[in-house]
Length: 338
Ligand SMILES: NC(=O)C1=CN([C@@H]2O[C@H](COP(=O)(O)OP(=O)(O)OC[C@H]3O[C@@H](n4cnc5c(N)ncnc54)[C@H](OP(=O)(O)O)[C@@H]3O)[C@@H](O)[C@H]2O)C=CC1
Ligand SMILES: CC(=O)N[C@@H](CCC(=O)OP(=O)(O)O)C(=O)O
Image 1: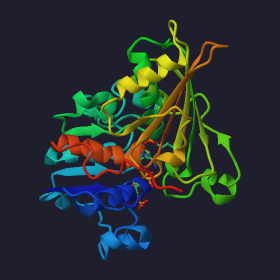
Image 2 (image 1 turned 135 degrees about the vertical axis):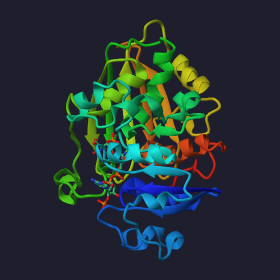
Image 3 (image 1 turned 90 degrees about the vertical axis):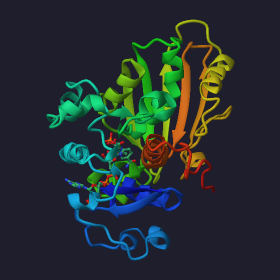
Image 4 (image 1 turned 30 degrees about the horizontal axis):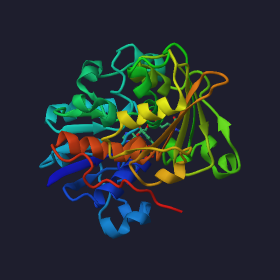
């Protein structure tokens, strides 16, 4: 058994961590903090968690909570994470950070894309990028992991088999992706109220969404990324377009995906177009590909649950790896349907 803590447990990714860890046989939640929610029973904020957490309350963050704890998940907004990580490093706990603070390795990239200076740039190179299907070698043996953003997870799982094999041009990849509203976190925002989102479908972050930098970094490419907000709670569907460097058919493209992910328990390659609902509540990504004979473009589609494979499930997968466990331990591979 490994005792873990969650800092920022009162948000959506924190709640999803609490849900997944309730079913995990070997990771035990020692504390769960909330910023404004300290003292609130977990079950009062999230009745869905009542059966597992009974009277347990969110704690106020205090370094003494780390006593006897081996690993800490951080579910904080970007910016807040880098404020606390140096003290966790000093305390010697393993870190799995869900925020963006330690994902970009180029020290100039964070200020460029996040519009603020990084307060712990000396730690940037010390984090493994927590996407096991693409960076498992980096994660094994690491003690600090930066879990990818939800859009980059969906997108790079779709495209990396092609960019890594030199099968597509990297100078102009196009990604259109839609996210459920939980991707924006628990606090209500003007663009996430019921009346704004219901019966609407809109693009945002045109040309400058911060996940572009992460996709560029992982794929070694220049990506034109347009995110969209879809009127659903969970899910990401990414539709990714790239120009093949040589002859490539649909059968070839499907073979590339199937052989790349043949041994991966959390990737399903389908003939049919993937849907977000097929991934709901699971840590599984669904992928397919086509090559359009008329235009010559390759299109790869990817569906995930943003809170599971796009965040907390992937975080638990990484925690399993860095604590020496089977990485699939305790994680759901099948979705909730209908
Ligand atoms: N939602 C998603 O699908 C995904 C999110 N992420 C990333 O994961 C992180 C958490 O996201 P999410 O759970 O959605 O966010 P939420 O806004 O839902 O939760 C944020 C958590 O951090 C706490 N918090 C907020 N501000 C501060 C602060 N200044 N200092 C200390 N604690 C603070 C909140 O406490 P309180 O409840 O009191 O406000 C809450 O516990 C973010 O970095 C996000 O970008 C990554 C992938 C997907
Ligand atoms: C729907 C929605 O608003 N989604 C969020 C992405 C969430 C995420 O993964 O953000 P981090 O990189 O900060 O972790 C957004 O576009 O900002």
